[in-house]
Length: 185
Image 1 (cartoon, helix red, strand yellow):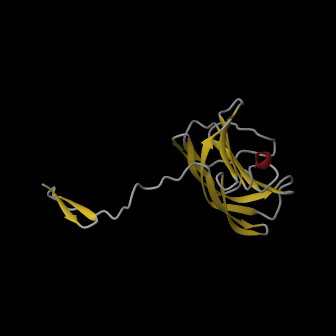
Image 2 (image 1 turned 60 degrees about the vertical axis):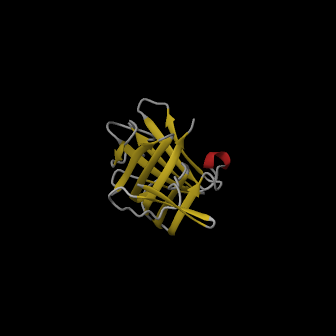
Image 3 (image 1 turned 30 degrees about the horizontal axis):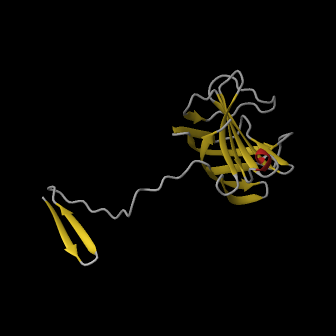
């Protein structure tokens, strides 16, 4: 049964369907557009939470790269100028990417991009002359990627990044990372 009650300046529709459901929604649930990322840095002189968005002047993208392995490059950068290269940025490199998955084995960054077998990753933090990279003993180090329309969503963390080149200390942790990126290139 459907009843329409009219009051000055307002109409109320009451429907009876044998059950009751109260909704407090005021409209459709907003969908976060692709192009957002946030993560925290800890150690090596960093103690901060960073957030970048393409709409806010940053650069957040996913790009499939040519090569022998199915390689995915995800860049999270403070600025879009010069492809984010000159400002602080984080790169996630995922090897043998098939569209979704959990990557939890860092590959050897000492020999350049060397994907090897299976789903492997590396994570790079660039801030001026300071560069840190994941190592085979960085743990936990994990990226989880899920496909969405036009791009990807994911989470990441990697503890124990070392200075590049040379390794050593101090170590850097990248934690509580989330991103959504559109495919480019």
